[in-house]
Length: 195
Image 1: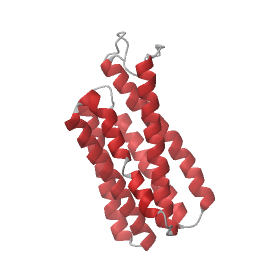
Image 2: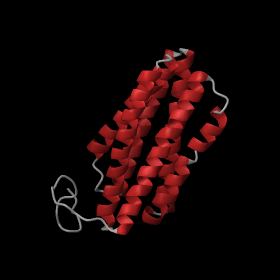
Image 3: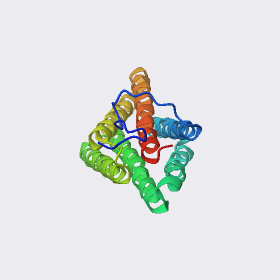
Image 4: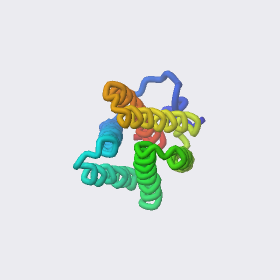
């Protein structure tokens, strides 16, 4: 396990740490970007499920999210690493859209293929991030990403089936889980760079 700046274990050590202004700002940026990630994903899901007229601009706005992450990652990990993360995250979003379209069309074969690609992409993201930062646990990140995918799929299926109550319930879970993922990413950077 990697070490924190104060010598304690990176995660789960029970040691309280006051964060610097830089660390708090970083945490807030990650939370904002993940909030935007899940909100705009929801807008695209609803656009596909209900054939809404704002699907195209909602998709364009969603696809800005990976570039925002690139800008956040670049000063810490360099342009090449940040750009690759952005590419992987964009693929995550594009695959999700194709999965929702296939599910809406009732094409179970295409949906299964897209879902398999989606989980493969999640694995690529997890292993890529773990190489960039040893503070990010592969097992923990993988469980978080898999939960994110599962909840998003459930949200989309509920929307396609016109079960708005369930779709909103799933989105509430997605939002909570996304903030946990944001905090894990920001905490890993704070510990790695002693911010």
